[in-house]
Image (tube, rainbow, N blue to C red; front, top):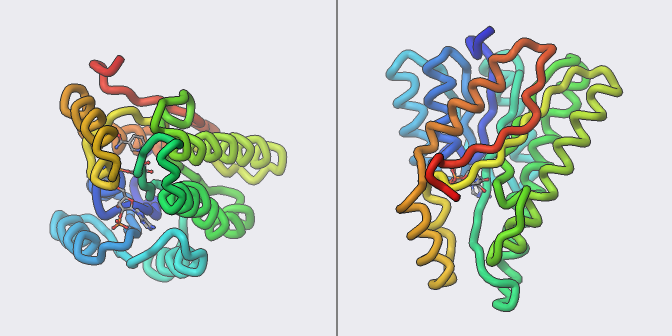
Length: 247
Ligand code: NDP
C-alpha cells in the first residue's frame, strides 16, 4: 500500500508539521490540498511541491469559518476528483497559567483547536459516509493525554479532540462506514508554535525545553504517511511521538 494518488486535505499547512507532511506526502505521490491563513507561505509551498513533480493546490482558509472548510473540500473534489483524507492539524498554543485569566487566548484555542477540528470533520463527514471510506487524522498533543501546568486550556482542547476522534472510530465501525481515524500526540517538535506564547516565563521555559530536546516536524510527517498507507482494513488509531531525549 502507499499514499500514491490519495487526495489529502491538510490544515495548518503553512508551517511546521502541516508543511512537512505536505512535502512528504506529495513526494510519495499524494495530491495535497493546502490550507492555512497565510497565503504567501501556501503559495511558496505549492510552488515547491509542483516544481519537484508533485501535485498541490491551496486555499487561504481560517478553520474557525465552517464555510471555508466546505469550499476547501469542494476545491479538492474539483481539482482532484475526490477526498480520501483530511489532516486536521491547524492549532495554536498561547500557554499561560489559568491564574493569568487570558480569556481571549482561551477562546481562540477553543475556536481553532477544537471547533476548527469539528469544522473540518463536518466538511468531510457527509462525503466519507456516502463513499464508505475516508481517513480523519487529527493532531492532538501529549498535552491531550497528560496534564501540564500552563497548558490548562490548550490541554483541554487536545483532551477534547482525543475523545472526539475515538468516538468517531467507534461510530464508524458500528455504522460500517469504514472511516479511519488517527489521532497524533506529539511532544516537543520544533515549529513556529511557541511564537504564539505571550507569557514571558512560559515562553522562556518552553523555548529552553525545545532547544534541548525538540525534533523536526518530519518525524510527524512520517507517522502521518505511515497511517495513511496502511491497508483499508487497518486503522492506526493513536500514536504518541516523543523526542527520544524528552523525559
Ligand atoms: P506551527 O505554528 O508551525 O503551525 C500551526 C499551523 O496552524 C500554521 O500553519 C498556522 O497557519 C495554522 N493555523 C493557526 N490558526 C489557524 C486558523 N485559524 N486557521 C487555519 N490555520 C491556522 O505549529 P505546529 O506545526 O507545531 O502545529 C501543528 C499542530 O501540532 C497544532 O495543532 C499543535 O497544537 C500541534 N502540536 C504541536 C506540537 C509541537 O511541539 N510543535 C506538539 C503537540 C501538538 P496560519 O497562521 O498561516 O493560519
